[in-house]
Length: 351
Image 1 (cartoon, rainbow, N blue to C red):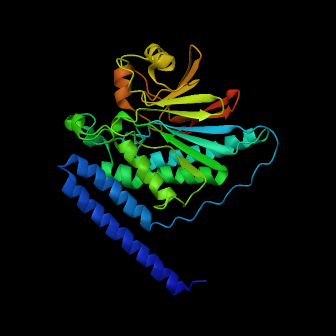
Image 2: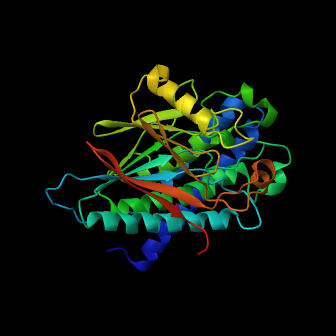
Image 3: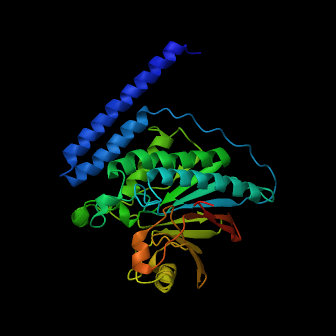
């Protein structure tokens, strides 16, 4: 047992290492602003250094459900947080509160399902636009409360990491699968010169993975994380498998020409093309975000969920399409053979 003095000394050493790592990262970022490849490498190196100095205690393993009934899997969809966006009723603090509320509701609804059958596993689907970005549209600097650095290296990993640790406290296993959104693009008008791998959503995911898994990959052995990048390609889609079914994830900015109205017809055409060989993987279900309007559709034999956002008071949407979504995220439950058995649009605004 360490004495109080020894514990404080060790804690101060850890704090000093974190401060040194943070200073080094900021210096590297400043030096690399004009050199795109070095910028991305500096971010990942700094995140790795920071993860190496953290000492997060493992989350306690929940009690194992030994019932013989075939277990189901909870699917938590995280989409369009637009972290750092400021509206009359939204900012980074409110985003964190709503994500935490969503975590509590995921656990509560899972307990309701468990009254009938085991739900030992949670899949977390990250559908992009978790960050708001800085140079996505003209005048954006007037509508955010923090820099892209803070979004993807400070508040983003803290909020997402806290959510994942809550899931680990309630589920025996957690698997994270993510795709990137358009708000993760870097460089403003020069974004086309960046590597397709360079996206702030992907960076946020990887930083959070490093922090939770630890530099040696062993802090949370019950956490599995699919790759956050595709070498030399955009990580615009992913296909996860639960039992006999494939689950197709994409952000939604691939659907063009839909801002004038709800683009569900365009979604149907594109999803069916992907299911008919547009991507090599087979899937029965599809998830997207981007339009901030929750929706549920059947395209041929493919069931699609358009996920909502945690934000509120979107004046751009009110002006352009005459509608504003209410803050919500989807939660589903899936049987390995029968597929999706239950679905909830989890509301996160004021009662």
